[in-house]
Length: 420
Image 1 (cartoon, rainbow, N blue to C red):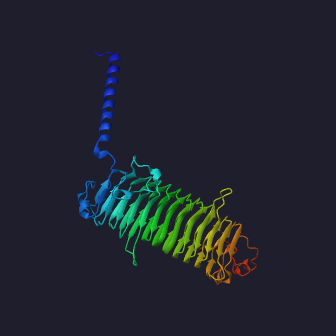
Image 2: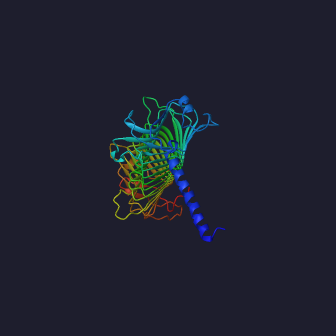
Image 3: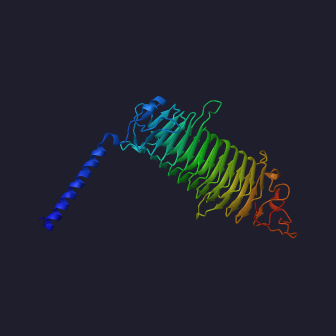
């Protein structure tokens, strides 16, 4: 009969054997070549190479049964064949492909302090169609995902952290733009430089993403056809959205807070609509510079106070721009509600009506002269909480104009918030 003390010793011995076995097993699997991070660049340059790739785990490349690459870690390291270093490069494919749950980081052997002398990319996609990148993680890279050429790509529910550029879309060449379609939906970007950067790109949907503490949330250069909607950005250091050149863009239903400069910055763009955004910032809500045909509609812009913060605090700032419509917005608690700044040689033709301006230190500034309109030209202007006039006939319109400066006035100031 085994004595109680012997039973205890036997139990301890069995437990020790089990723990040792588990440790040996973990060492075995860690050292297993298949479980080690992939350090060489994986290149796929055709549908045939994709079909035979050892990194494709299942599928036949059809829409109903796509190729799948999943559950692999990439440690991006120096590539002697290129000045840039990549984890995964895919080009020239038409097959349906899902890239799922991969991780990309610089190899531990890489000295990341040499940025930007070396560019480390997670995934590079060129002239591909039917590719989805989903639930992947990208950390401390120069660029997480780069897309170029005529491509159709979905980038969905991935995480990007401390990347110089999270997603880079670049570029079309020549006089005509290719048909490209990239959708970014539900991704998270943390502490990146540019979370999304579009360079000479055609048609992008940036939907329901989260940007935290990035320099720029969405940036575009000579880019056309962008739809930027439903995103949430906080503490952007330069801008939540910054478009320069290009146009035909829609920026709507986004939530921007605590941006340290401008929340929405538009420079040299044409035919852009900014609508239904919520902006709470110590800086500038919407800055429009050297642009034309811009509509700012139904946005809620207010100041989020930072003590002694030196940012230019203007709700809507229109600088040397023409054919700008500002309607149905609520602007409050700003240093300046709306400012139109131009000169005698540059007719601006800005229309401002059906807005509410409340608790601003200065409601409006207009250096553009009589060419700008501060009412709809018929019967409705704006609500100004500092309007000194009366409404004796009780029609909801002030009996005297609201004076902005010597040649700028709202002829039909509203006595209460406009109701749409």
